[in-house]
Length: 311
Ligand code: SAM
Ligand code: DTB
Ligand code: SF4
Image (cartoon, rainbow, N blue to C red; front, side):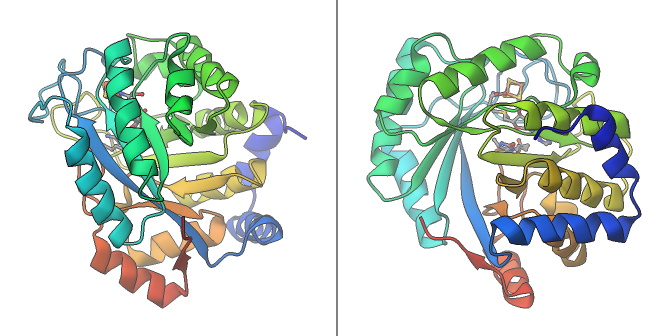
């Protein structure tokens, strides 16, 4: 049963240990807490994006120093996917800095999806807004998940992005569902939003019917040259609370500890896993920014007794 926004705000106010205890208990009802779903990300088309998302180093409106590069070839993508599989990833996510793909782009990505799927990996793509018919083409190629984030609450959204609105995002998400794809949808925290906005983000996600199978909770990576580059950092325990509330409101979804891990201690990540995170991005790079590499993650997994799910 979906919770009201007021109920979700009340969860955020709980004493820290009560919240964590409740979230961890719900986590254990639905998942083995040792199992972590591991995804690997590849930027298949980098930079030069016409959109103005305030957090993003790939917008051509910001001076973040990202070098533009055109769409990779299928052979390049397959090489990266093989390496990701060898490092233990079960899902391979291909990201493109587009407002949305042209039909020819969809055809090219469909070919990549077929090739990555043939390696025995789950596939995910994040290509921006989709037009009618495009999600079906990706589904026909064997795409498992489509990532499209709502990013923040409806109220805070307009402070961050001006070139596409919240409703555009929901329209793409409904096209993705209609095509039979699984949905990966989450947001970013630490963008100057209030606690009420964090509750609003989770409320929107948990009101989706069905809720997204995969829910990335990104901590803003503050990139110099973007409008949010100098944003004050979010208090770490508030980040843990956000994960815990997401777990309580989305009990059967995989909650991903996504961008922002590079700046986190092992202890903070451990608290996030305890609070209900059970998915992450592996590899030393996200799309354009650093991520903890294989050595750091295998040390962390060993210390916490975690294991990567196989594909
Ligand atoms: N261009 C497509 C789009 O926007 O849908 C796909 C790629 S876009 C980079 C995917 C997601 O990455 C964004 O929706 C946002 O949630 C996340 N993201 C981008 N820059 C980020 C940053 N600096 N920190 C945290 N998350 C970020
Ligand atoms: C998501 O929610 N986070 C990932 C993935 N989906 C595409 C992207 C994070 C990007 C962080 C900034 C960068 O590396 O450019
Ligand atoms: Fe473009 Fe996506 Fe970055 Fe927005 S988040 S500027 S749409 S690449």
